[in-house]
Length: 111
Image (cartoon, rainbow, N blue to C red; front, side, top):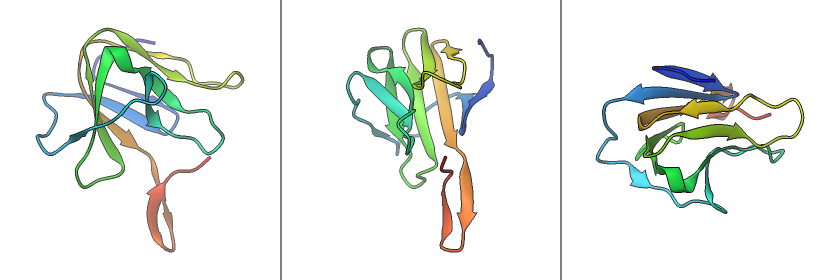
């Protein structure tokens, strides 16, 4: 799937933006990929680390940023009932994670 300004995959929303905030911090890849969303069941949402730079928001655990240097795909690592890959063109993007409310406060949505 290709998109222009925004797309969703599972509990992620990816939106094209103009620039990554100066307060964002670089993230470290895991086994050659950047994990945009960890899953308790192991079916993470990932992009190839060689094609992108990934950043965490300074004060919001529900937000991260992606600088895509080479065309790549946002992939869902599950062999069954999976989300289709999303083709991401070079540019800068904001990644929002879905959240859910609990009596203790908001947390990342869980499978």
